[in-house]
Length: 99
Image 1 (cartoon, helix red, strand yellow):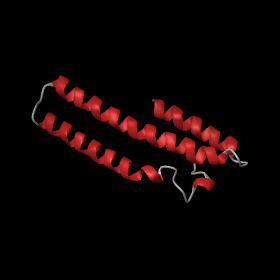
Image 2 (spheres, one colour; image 1 turned 120 degrees about the vertical axis):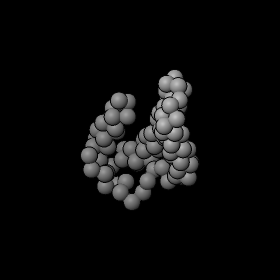
Image 3 (cartoon, rainbow, N blue to C red; image 1 turned 90 degrees about the vertical axis):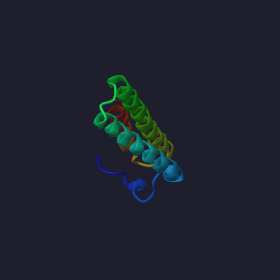
């Protein structure tokens, strides 16, 4: 779905950008660590535990972004003629995020 017109020049996560970038940097480190564990033939369970931790950390980033979107772009759209379109987009996004 195309980006909503009324959110085009603003990002609802702007005040969380530094935190998000730090989280993503840590996740990147976790992924590199998992790669090294596999290269070093580490025990499967230990690798799986690290995969679960990285997955959880990435889901947290998604949750922060989803909340910011709902409290920013979606909330702002409720006072416009784009509210139905924005609600459809939100539902579609939540469904994708839940997969």
